[in-house]
Amino acid sequence: MFGSLAQAGKYLGQSLRLMVGLPEYDTYLAHMERTHPDQTPMSYEEFFRERQEARYNGSRAGCC
Image (cartoon, rainbow, N blue to C red; front, side, top):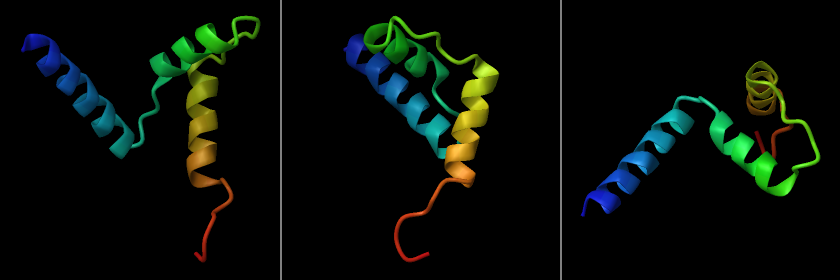
């Protein structure tokens, strides 16, 4: 029971961070280590700036 409760808490926290626009740097680091071990990951500041650019200055799809 506690395992599923902890998992639900993890997903809830992740959802709340995404709703307010906080990027998941730890998830990014895990991805880089797992799939791109030969590349140097961005610093937190670089990652945050890149995510903000993608969110606010990226090309918009659709009609608006």
